[in-house]
Length: 107
Image (cartoon, rainbow, N blue to C red):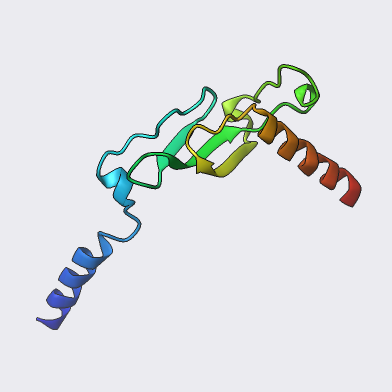
């Protein structure tokens, strides 16, 4: 009897672990830019997201037209912020350039 009750409680309570309320309510991310592989809204308004997108190709970082790597390259950026964040926008280019410089200096 105790084992059955314990199992029941684990199933009921454990089922809610890891469930995002926004996803459970079918909230859609608003304004997701091209190139984003995955956008998971983290608020009810669908304006704050967990985004995944490929990194920018290093040889295009300093150009007027930065280009993302292939989705299957394995170089994926894990980002938390506004759902309409541009993966090739000025902010991301600057962030990736700074990260690249930091890696070069520390190697």
